[in-house]
Image (cartoon, rainbow, N blue to C red; front, side, top):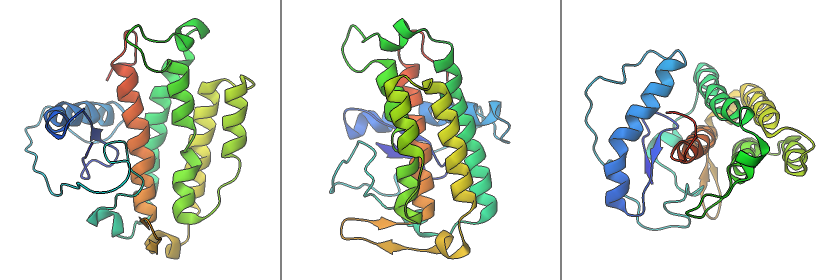
Length: 222
């Protein structure tokens, strides 16, 4: 997995390091297109270059969105303005997923691809799952997220509504953080936790699975 830290939320992945690197330019273009259609001042056609700033070869969950990876920029305190801007990005990203899900019938969401893998509904529930958990690593307990996930799993709440509601809850919780929480570096036995890192993973997780859905027939367009 390639983490594009200058575009928080953008990742590219593949079965090997080389495949992930090869996929990175188009992933960046796709992410810039997403940003532009949601009002951010970027030009998806502008030339750019990439370079590998760090190549991590040890640790758990490498290549699968490891919650234990920490990069230099993750340690920089985050401002209130940055939180507001990044959660606008997150809510628009979540809306692209929810808006697509809302247009699908139950049969389409439950269908398992002929090549194998999870149904779209399973992916959507997976997207929903850690929405509060990522923030909790940096700010302590978050309440209400598990209940909504359970309601969606049981079919008692439409998954699109659950996605939207938890996105709003996450934004509200992040914006309510104190200056101390925004600058804290929490040392744990397996990892280092900061609010900026938690927000990065929140964005990356949704983007990863929006991209996964986009690669399926009838999936959302990036």
